Length: 365
Image (cartoon, rainbow, N blue to C red; front, side, top):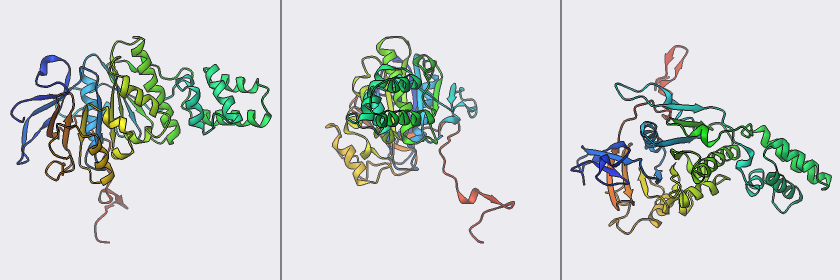
């Protein structure tokens, strides 16, 4: 299938709707073949996997650039590694600019989390005294002050009241909850919104992702935003292990009807729930070597694949090389991801690049 351009998720009709250049086919001799595009018109669930250093975050950045230039979409990327804040920098050569809005201190409304999620987030069993108070407060109040007031007004034992309020105080100290936090309308513009959660602990990071995902999904269900949201998540396994999980699974299983897409990138597909793999209609695999990760993909491998993704002649070997399983068209593609137009923020530093006392480091000392 390397003789002509192809649109992953759609087929051969490049003019049928918005698409983005993903790269080019990779011929058997390693040369570059026909252009390969990605469908950005309809809703999709995509999973990008690969071991560290082989380009999964880079590929996510390529998709982000394309989404920022596409019509009719509202792309949002949750950035836990400070990799995508470079999307707002000038593009190389004569490439079209990328419109990006980088949010460095994101906050979401407390009401974005339901009572069960509040208890899970703060580690209070719902059946405990303090957990029960927190559950009730989260169901009644839209602000942290309101939650504290609700707890204080009960006739519960003082120890339970104090514990519940202390946990609300802890959530406030994270700095990610605000009644005037990010809304779907804030995120529904044509530019890509980069939510920088780098440096946050896992729990507040998950709270932000949960709030954003909920806001986008609800807004499309109620048709209060017109553009179709695309939520991009790097290090996705981290969010499937916290309070963001239920929202991500909702988008995976029910996002198609309201038009909400999810793109997940992870170096640990074995840590992603089975639904995260089985519900993805596009799988982009960089090199993997972990048996557990390969087994996770193998378990959800479609029947039209005539050989295993783990086969030596199938698995990519070099940085930027991918195998794409397109369930929408039931096709498989070997490709090379294109070069990014904006700087990539995920390159690892080298000791040889360090200048010490005015001299570059060398191998001899």
